[in-house]
Every structure is written in structure tokens, then in C-alpha cells.
Image (cartoon, rainbow, N blue to C red; front, side):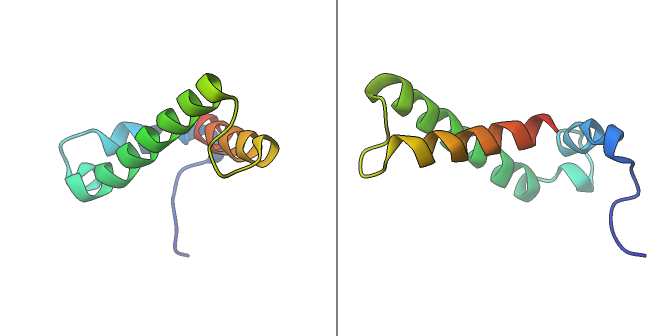
Length: 74
């Protein structure tokens, strides 16, 4: 079997290993995660400031931001 060997309720360990000084916490793996967090923050601030992201509808933008945020908590 290939894949993660952690149970679903131990998923927080994935983020722990990402920021530890090991191969699992390499810069190339951290970069993608940190860029996603930066983009999420910019989009949330834009929605809070102007009510929507320019060029998009408010509904789908808020739903996709909610999905990304909720997936980080799961």
C-alpha cells in the first residue's frame, strides 16, 4: 500500500512535520503551503474590504475560500 500511514485524526502531524528541520520540512514543501496561506489571506482581506474579488462574483469566491479554510482545519 502506498500513501500516508497516519489516521485521519492525526492529520495535524502533517503540519508539524512540515515545519521541522527534516526532509519532510524542506523549503520546497514549505513554499507551496506558505504561498497558499498568503493567497488565502489576500483573498479574504479583499473580500472583507470590497465585498468581493474584482472580476468575480461574491458567492463562488466566498464558497471557495470557505472550502480552502475548512480543509485546513480538517
